[in-house]
Length: 285
Image 1 (cartoon, rainbow, N blue to C red):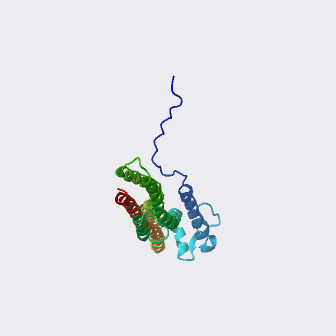
Image 2 (cartoon, rainbow, N blue to C red):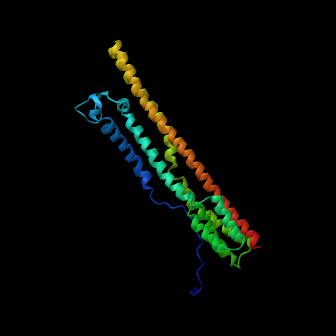
Image 3 (cartoon, helix red, strand yellow):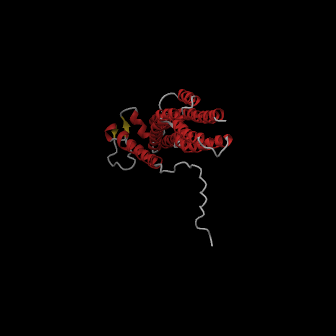
């Protein structure tokens, strides 16, 4: 008969997994921005009052003629223009989203100064004060450091493991905390990197379509009037290129800014892990 009083072995602790919460902004923002791009192109740039010869029939793509302003000429760049405007809005949306997220992840104060303060408290064996510094930092480095410090404090009173095993336990705790923080930092950067390449190509595509349309008119009509329309059509088509290149430039610049900031935070996380393991190994041999 089985011994029912025998304790059941505890299940091994599973490694921390990154949170898989729904990324609602990544799903809805691109669609909303493309729709907003069309609304701006159709109802703002394409407002009938902006043209000397508006198309009263309206519809999805009214054939307005005679734009009154330079910005309004962008409307005649074709149906690619609202897509490009949508791409610009997507870039601006995720730039703002990443700015807020990375600013929060960076926490309060200088990361190097924060690590120096923690090192000072650990050198004086004041673990609780070190944890308090993490609460003040409020960033990703502080979160990882706090998780490591809690395990650090636990290992001080642990009499079952040797020093090497304790250090490995602290290191594992830091790695698990890091696995929760890094995905949040890098999330949604793919939109900026993708649009950085795609926007320029879309701009060139819109320009080519405009050039084809302009040269077709030249072949059909001929004469000085056709030449004038050709030069006007080329000018309008180049708005696609300008909008595509401008959007791509913003995406590239901000992508590099964000990756540089993330590299700084990642370096701080790595340094915090090294600080804890080396401090424990030196203080509690």
